[in-house]
Length: 225
Image (tube, rainbow, N blue to C red; front, top):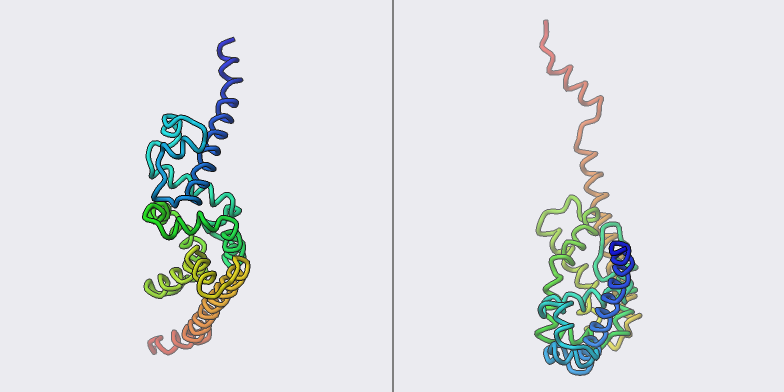
């Protein structure tokens, strides 16, 4: 009987823990929107969520974990496209992500402009960079290391909140318009990379001797009897 009770209770506990976690992150997002990320404390999150401070610590041991969780929480609301993955359509994903930033504009700005926000973004940067490297492995194949890094860096910039904020502030574009602009630019860059690859393959084909040339060279080198 005890075993059956534990089996029954376990899914319920998981649901309750997930609901509490969501409640905490929603409270954090609302506080960041109002006060900026640097001003948010565990005590403030607990009060906003209607929970005890110790409950917050049960779910998030420190600010680093809390920041990472908030970034992941936001990524879910952007359709899970904040982290590019191999085989993904970067241009299409950028269009969706930048348009979605408008729905969370104060939170995105706090993440960009505050010290805590920078720490939050840097905490996921290795994962984000790995995602771009995987997604761009095929288009950048054959490039030298420096050129490959430049290509990935500019595409990552176009697929970022920095691009969204700059186009909004400097040019008055909506998130949807900024997304279209980034998608267009990424598409142009990817097509250029593919064009370079085709050119390299053509040059390699011209430079490598065909079967007849190889046989002719072998006959020429054959010693006379």
